[in-house]
Image (cartoon, rainbow, N blue to C red):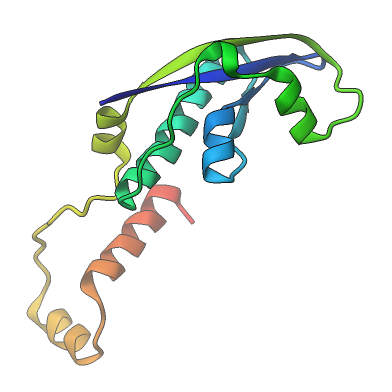
Length: 149
């Protein structure tokens, strides 16, 4: 399934881009914004933002927000809602960003995956006696390894 949303880009005077997805910001009452050092990075971040917000809605069993027509998305309305005085940007433009939600769901979804592990019997016995949640403990240990905390 692909979703397509109009996205507003601002090229900042000090460098980089600020990015906003007004449809998601309004519908989900959240800050649907991101940024990037380059245009390529900003577009990639916009894809990630859209995918994350839409995937969360779908996994919670909620309807995904309807996309507006690009001509109905207004820079003025966004700027008024942000209430920023004297925003000093170089240029601004709007474009559509398309995201393959199935690809993101496969890679980043919250769907549980069953794994079979082998541990020594004595550890199993002791952990069960302490009522340790094996799945939660493995998840925490993997996250610790992944992020090297």
